[in-house]
Length: 141
Image 1 (cartoon, rainbow, N blue to C red):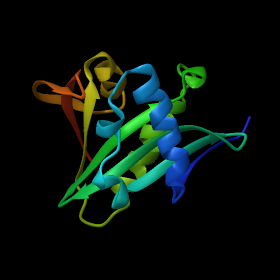
Image 2: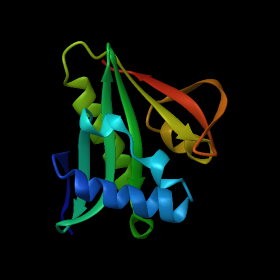
Image 3: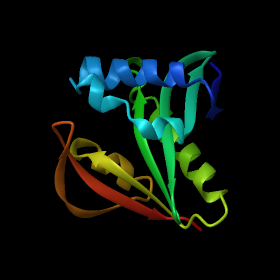
Image 4: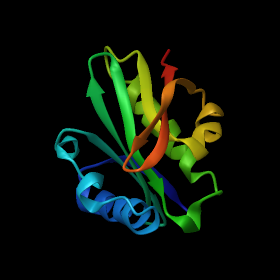
């Protein structure tokens, strides 16, 4: 099994994964899943043996890398692929000049996952596409 996680220009592959997870599984309205930030974001694609299995995007805001639209297909959950995807996103962010922190909006059920990766919760619970979220941040060194 060969896992590759890299920056990609293949937005169609990323959007297809996001559609399966967010729209099909989580019932996020399709018009809320995709936005104008896709055009300016850095996209990461995780493949297993060449097959797209996960994605994330990074939006650059001043000194902050906003990691979002993180998903892995159901078949790969619990395998460590999500962890590897977040670690890759953090590495990309840490390698960008002037970026001092990574931020994300975690679905409430996934907070523990991100805490294990060094993120800390801040702020109140809020709804994003009808799903409860909390903001999280991690300093980059």
